[in-house]
Each structure stands twice: as C-alpha cells, then as structure tokens.
Image (cartoon, rainbow, N blue to C red; front, top):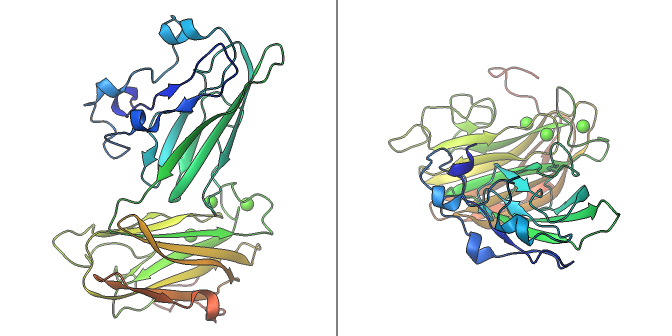
Amino acid sequence: MRADSVAAAVAFCVCGTLAACQVDVDAVRPTDVGADVGTGSDTADAVDTAPDATGDADDAACDGLAARIEVLEGLEVVPQTKLHLIGSLSCGDIARYQWEVAQPVGSRSVFLPSATAPDPTFEANVAGLYVFRLVVTGMDGEVSERAEASVTVTPDHAVHVELVWDTPSDPNQTDEGPAAGADLDLHLLAPGGAWFDSDGVDCFWGGCVPPSWGGPVTDDRSLDRDDDDGAGPENINADVMPAGVYRVGVHTWDAHGFAPSYATVRVYLYGVLVFECEDMAIGERDFIELGTLSWPDGATAGRCGADVIHDFSPPPWFGAP
Ligand SMILES: [Ca+2]
Ligand SMILES: [Ca+2]
Ligand SMILES: [Ca+2]
C-alpha cells in the first residue's frame, strides 16, 4: 500500500498533558476509502501518515506522555479493509504500547503482529463498528490516558451476505492453516437452482464463477472471502441479480473435530442490515437453509436454524469432502 494513496486520518491531542487524544471524525472523513488504493491522486490527504524522526510541529508539541491513534484508511471503510493503525505518533518516551478493540459481534480479528506493536494492522472484515483504544506506558512507568478511534465498516454492494461462526471447542479460533478450525461455508442460491450447482447458480466457494446471474457483466456476484479455518467471515456480494427468490444456506464442510459451531448470518442491502440469524447450532456436515431474499423488492424471510438437514452430503456431481 502506498502511503500517498490512502486518505489520512488526523488525530488531535494536546501533548504534554495526560488528556486522551480525540479523533476529529469530520476532519478525517475520507474521500476514497480503500477502493482506489494506488491511484496516487490524493497526496493532499497524506499529511503526517508516518512517524518522522526529523522533528516537526507534532514532535515539538510532544513534551509529555499521551496516546494517539491514526487510522491510515480513514474512519469509514468497506468490509475486508486491512487497517493500518498508527500509534507511534503518540507523545513521550514510550516503553510499551497496548491496543484493545471492541468489534462487531462475531468478528474475531486480531492485531498483527501483536496488540503491543506500535503500528499494528487489523483486518476489518465484518460490517459494523470497531472501536480501537490505545494506552502507552512511559519509560518511568507512567501510564497515559486512553486514546480512542472508531471505524465504521459499511458494505458498498447492493447485496452483502455475511457469515461468521463461533466454535467453542476450538481453543484458538483465530489461528490459520489446514484443519485449524471448523470450515463452514456460505451459500447464496439463484432462483431455480440446486445447492452445490457448480455452474455458477449456487454462489459458494466451489461455484461462484461465471456465467453471470444476469446483466451484461460476468462478475455481478462473488464470494469475496472464503474461510476454511474457523470464525469467518465469509462474504458474498452482488450488484446485479435477476428478479426472483434467492435462498441462503450454511453448510459445515468439515468441522475438523471441533463441531458444533454457532453460525450467524447477516444480510445487508445497500449497506443496511435487513435480516439476521444469530447463533444457529450447526454440527458436522449439517446444512441449514435459513432464509430467502426476494429481489429486487428486498423482502426477506426465514426460519434461521429451525430446520437443520443432518449429514448433508454434496450431490454426486460435486464430490465429497
Ligand atoms: Ca483454531
Ligand atoms: Ca469455508
Ligand atoms: Ca479463519
């Protein structure tokens, strides 16, 4: 990512005091969150996006200890934005950084490389509000007040379907790799299709490919995030859909010994949450057809986890796990 191609968020604080920094939301509202990284057309935004060692007004004002947060991508982003959190512009001689986050229900992102890194990254994959907090400790053990920055994640597609899941028996739901967690899958089935149709009718990890659902473009819908090692999210986005009733399903492809999981599915239309099923219990190879979305009127209906098909195997034409 180029530093001059992202909208810079600007944090304000009075250094030299123990007052927490406040982020001016109006001042940092980005003009181009995430979508156009690499255009290089917005250098005017890029003030103070990185710490400097040469000394400027910020440094001159830092004669005490104060935590401050900058978010390079801005405070309003789309799902699956990798946030670059800057804490190293905090004031004072700092011995330790400590980040915390309150994230949307079901989101289990972590700070990388760690929650004590000065400038960690953080994947904001789930729609909703993320509140980041930072406290710094000085060399003499003095602790700052807490700085806070709130980032709102809003889907920018006509239809955004999101799956997250909780798997209590998995001791670490955020680790990654083969068999590291339960692999659940989100399905969005076009009118008249059958689950696991791999010719593009069923949008899921094994079949969300051209041909198009409708309209002149072939990329009118897509599975934008597949997760095979626990927690999710998985996201399906669509902008052009033929009229009709679409079915939403969740399947446990392989729980890798961690079943059951508790799945939550949310449907957003034009960035607004219109349908939600929370904490549906789902076991190994279970399939839940949880609801429908009628298009273009946007009507939703569903029974969430009331009807579970146990030991659901993909049809022969698709192949077994
Ligand atoms: Ca795990
Ligand atoms: Ca999956
Ligand atoms: Ca995962």
